[in-house]
Image (cartoon, rainbow, N blue to C red; front, side, top):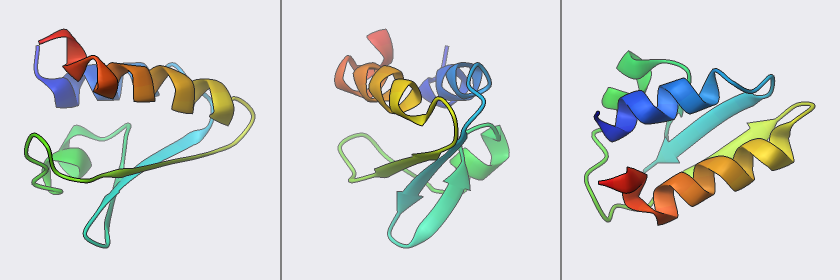
Length: 72
């Protein structure tokens, strides 16, 4: 499974708004198309933002996914 799909699936499990930013471009983590438009390659720098009731947990879980390279 592609990392973008894994990210979308994880993001939909949270109530908070989740965004990734790369070079000033922002993507909604619940939208595959939005994520793909970032053109994020492996080892590029991304900023993860979350806002809402479970934002801290979302940041923790999704950061772990990135640090484990999406189990690939």
